[in-house]
Length: 585
Image (cartoon, rainbow, N blue to C red; front, top):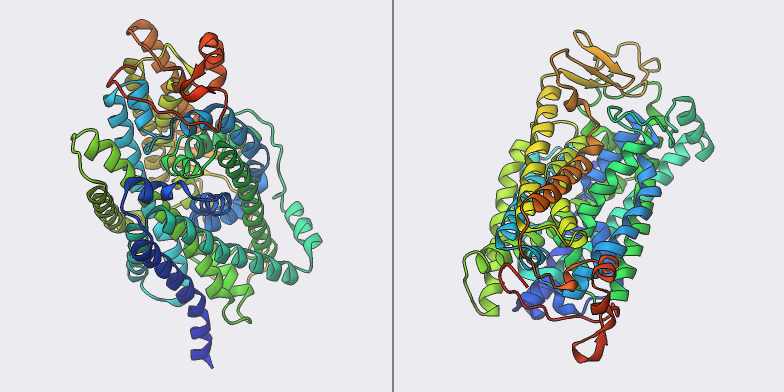
């Protein structure tokens, strides 16, 4: 009987991976993927539904499914405001500022824009920053679902990592964007079903939704409008809404993977629809994962598993809860872990597909000046995806030594997101910004954020900086339980209600990690504009490289004129041919 239960648990996992392999084989062997447009843009024959599902799936990783519930359990519901207020603001800015420019230009690589607006140096530096950031981020995405699978099955986490990665690299490499998009769509079904089932079981065991809200209210978990503007508080309304707005602008407005999917749609109106539906889908995901966190608190409010040594770190909290509530239902634990792995696969495949295209377009073609046939280009990109994938597998061994998955992932993105968002914003919104300013802005942002993030992570690792979490109880644990104290602040000074630090820790390291992307962006824009004004350069900017509202203001005469083929520049269903003239247009 026990053997049968294990077979049922593995079934969902095997089916999901099998479908991913079949889709990769289909698009790699029976569907033409022999050109750059086919491999990166799906031949521009994609539809809104799979693109939207792929966007959602690529932004939902094991970090979301395991990190958000842990965040809610430990620190309350303040973060969930991002699913409502933040998403609306972000999508409005994306549709108003960034998307019209990138869709009209129809560029294979989003970094090609920087070569047109500034010069090849700006383009190359930005591509390098992005590629490094992505290769460092993907191992986190891989490790988290592998750890969850290890907790449920007992299989070695490194073996699981290799299996997951090999399958993901396989279908991503041979199938291109079409395989990535359709596997993302199918994998997202596994993820959604697993989340919903866990929530239903959790609500039933908790005695109803009312009991869940009551328990969280009594435990001081329900919190949405903590309006304290102090930037050194970890989670407030302002740190979440303002901070994550910049983070999401970087991951949706100018991220090559997101723009690649928008451009893969045949019309601008469909690209805009995909963006809007994406925001709606992400809001639902945030609410559902937050609900799991509330359910976990309801169940363990009187006996914290971490303090009771049932688990040894927060990464295992969600799998532990799922195994607890779904123990009587064979297959459900396996289904949930398959959902986590699906989320990791979809994110990894999307990122590998994106980074392979970026490396090919911005380094092999542009920087090295190599011209090859479409078939050869497709082979080069597939080999690049293969190499990047295996580098990420090796880096998993580094990630497993770190702690705090949610804060770690946001902090890592904070180093590079600000510099990249600042350079695109300089180009799109500021006509007087030049290449000197762009390079100085990026490097300044990168240096400042590397200093802040590295310093903060080092002090956290040395236990010189600690954060106060919501109260957790062990009153309901069995009498013979051995407890571990995770709230020892001896030798530290209380900075505010949420932060304890050593007297030697610099104040800048205490700034909320939510603000990292915002600080990086503002530093990059400020330095970029200052350098551009102090060291002006002669520029002849094509109006199509500016966002429409700036274009209307700076070039009113151009906007009134007709562009080739008798179409007006205001018609967003049109596309234009843009010819690069190296550093100037």
